[in-house]
Amino acid sequence: MIEEMEGTDEEGLWRVEPLCSVAELDDFEHLSRLLDRPRIKIERKLSFDERSLSELSGNLRLVDDMYSPAVGRSVLDTPASSARDWFEPHGPHPMIAEAWDALRRSIVLFRRQPVGTMAAIEHASEEVLNYDQVFVRDFVPSALAFLMNGEPDIVKNFLLKTLLLQSWEKKIDRFKLGEGVLPASFKVNHDPARKSETLIADFGGSAIGRVAPVDSGFWWIILLRAYTKSTGDLSLAETPECQRGMRLILSLCLSEGFDTFPTLLCADGCSMIDRRMGVYGYPIEIQSLFFMALRCALAMLKPDAEGEEFIERIVQRLRALGYHMRSYFWLDFQQLNDIYCYKTEEYSHTAVNKFNVIPDSIPDWIFDFMPSRGGYFVGNVSPARMDFRWFALGNCIAILSSLATPEQSVAIMDLIEGRWEELVGEMPLKIAYPALEGHEWRSVTGCDPKNTRWSYHNGGSWPVLLWLLTAACIKTGRPQIARKAIDLAESRLSKDGWPEYYDGKLGRYIGKQARKYQTWSIAGYLVAKMMLEDPSHLGMISLEEEKGKKRVIKRSASWTA
Image (cartoon, rainbow, N blue to C red; front, side, top):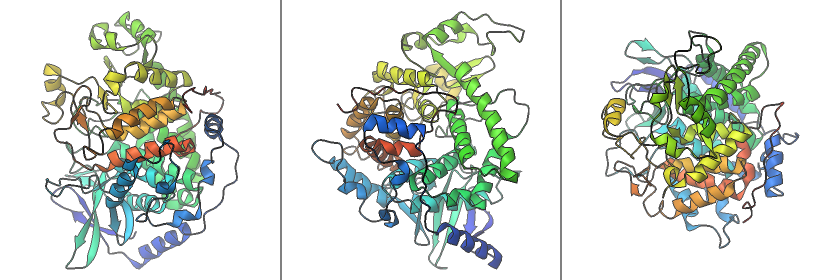
């Protein structure tokens, strides 16, 4: 290893020192030399997604042909995207240059190498808290922006650095966390006296509620696959270190226990919704990310002695997880009507109401919200409990990972269009709908003053979700929805100082505790713009249908409108 850990500090953060043994240093230098070899030019047939995108948008560049000598450019240089002809008829939007400048100012250096982007840039007049740290989930849209702009080095550095942090022993109080857990975030600590830099990582010991980040490992695997697809460079994913890192993450999720469902049991606050919001159990966000990470790992794991076992377990889990989610989490008009008529207390393997959902527990709002055309994956399903709330991230990832069938993907987009005011309003995109209010808010959130109704995670509007919505729109052949959402964002984001989130039923007001110049709000906008300009970028974050399934996407008349 390149660093050694020197215990933990009082705040539950792990300090990573720059000291290392000669053997460890030799190992790291060997890995660095291996990864610095010239990238391999991959010649392969078009995947289904790439063929579909080519048919939709004309003569697009293939994902693996996007690599050019410009990749070696420093991330501190002027973006290549600023010189491109953007799809706006009157030239590039002025927000693009501003966004790239802000994104570059957020870059965090460790020993003169870029290793990520901090959560928020402007915090001089505010309490910093942890907004100066590099969050794994927050960095994903930044990483995609750099990859789409031909700058993969910062992404590779980030992947390697977090992989090294994974190897440390992790304890909260006297309890040892699983070996595969990745940090929620890390920061660089500068010591002027010693003229040294160290990394300090948070594995959940300092988080609200002290919950480990379940989503970090999934995002890491998804980002590794995006890096590979964007650059055509297989050497990083094929290193023993990355192969072992994936296996460690997967071993946490695929271990046998008392589970009777293929879904992953989680605590509240283990993902983007990192506060108590009643998503404990089997939240859709985690299940969608889990499904996507399994499919990405399946494509990257080597079928060697160690990898073969994991490959077999992944295939079995994907089959069970896909069936479970599509059967029991899916809700449309017909399914809602069926649940409304459910019998209860069925004791048999032939039971229709397999989770014993009580029809009287169906909330009143869902009957008016559910359109005749459209549907979505509900927030949570567990014994005698179904959370009917809409969660944007989980449903968008379901489309991108092909967890959603083609028909379900179309239905999700129909729902967004049909319930535009509720789910998008004046600022995309509602993280959850509807908001918890009154007694329900008090009992579910514990009277959380930050998650009041229509604020933050409780029905707030998050601009970062724009990139996920855009990707889902492109995959389903509905770019007009993305264009409409981007237009809304461009009317406010820059003028408002790139807030973290917006409040209110329509997302009209800047969040009461929102940080300005939130990096993933900035990066999410850039990724959305670049994907609409060149839809072939979608290939790095989208997965085609599983083999044996045929998928048809009809070209939208508004694609070139």
